[in-house]
Length: 570
Image 1 (cartoon, rainbow, N blue to C red):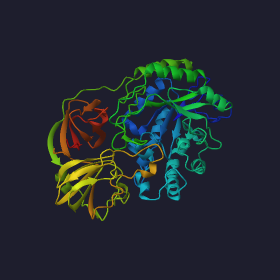
Image 2: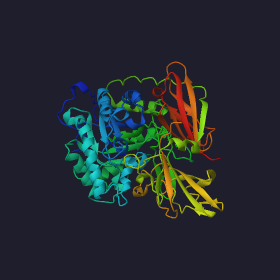
Image 3: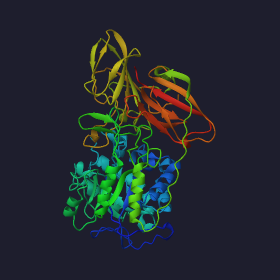
Image 4: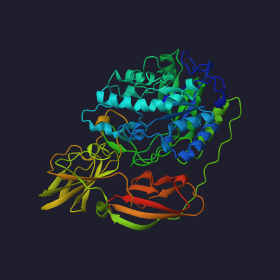
């Protein structure tokens, strides 16, 4: 999403003297803040994609680039991983993140969803919502409304003290996200607006949509002139559509995300600079999405499905002005030169990037096959039919959100086994624990030998779709097959320990204070890697990503544990 704010005067934010005269207003052709013309020069940095130890580094670099406003999404599925269980601590301490932005002299536009897109699993919605077979996400369906209300009760209690009115840095709040391109329920956006205002949010409300959704995703009384774009500005059209409203590009896409099996996206600095310059010349406000992308650690990546399912890679580098590891790219320096023209004072100096080091190889010390590991797992759950991951009786009956599920049954007979495209998303198929093939969206059939055999499916949830109208259909595992007599299930969303598939236990020795580094996995197939209990994310030999970012705060001097799950059968 891109929101554009105008800053016609150079505005210096001093947290210690934040006057509360008047918040952000959109009553004329220019935004005003504290009664003065104000243009938002914003950038997106997601706290949940950046190790907490590096929050300050990234935001200082934002300030030094000449930006005055931080924008961030809020991922519901991280903050409420189980129904009624909330987490706003440590890496997810939203209050600390927003407060840090204020301390560094940045305003904040908060984008709390509940749906956020963000190339994040299910667009940030919790997977336990899908336990309801009738669930209609992003609508006024009662089951969704009730869950949103309970979540907003908690979320708003956290963020309300951070609002401009209360002396905090949050000058605007976005209502949902790109709803104009979804638009299934004309009562839904008023409901989300009321969720915010009825809980005491009085700051300016904004929306964010692409061109197609601009007229369908607004809310009464909000600033509905915020648009997302990349290379084609169309600012003249915006001015004609909304001549008496301030304009903002809520998401100016500084690059793009990558999916497995395709090329790495690059948006050249010179091309980007030309568009940003035009936006600023027209007096439009801007938010760079992303200013710093960071990393989609763990199993949290989203996926695309516009007829073909494509899961997204672990890196969220985005070809942004700040690289995945926090380095200032040529884009950064071009933008800094440009934004400096909109400040009457010299910009702060650019902080140096964290040191980096190439370490030696992590030495493998143990390995266990998947079948050896089963003895250490919980007892399997048994059912007459396959059960999708979200409805498995685990995690306090909230189901399994991410990772892998092992399905097993006994069959008699052989021939071609056809999945009817009911594998979500990729399964290794075993007969008597010998791999006989792989099933996914492209391959639906595998040969099974004659006789009575144990048939096993190791199914990987490769990431739920985060954008489009297929959100209600994102149940994972084996959600629809009904042809097996009885099955047992084991779930694996985290691993503590090679046969393939299997677990490697490696050790990495770090001499001296830890430094940032990258893990090379070019000689491996497909799987996930952990370091000292932190899930770095997925790797896959098909690329385009072949290195996983390992931040120094997750390492320790001396021995480091590096478990790897390798699932590629070849």
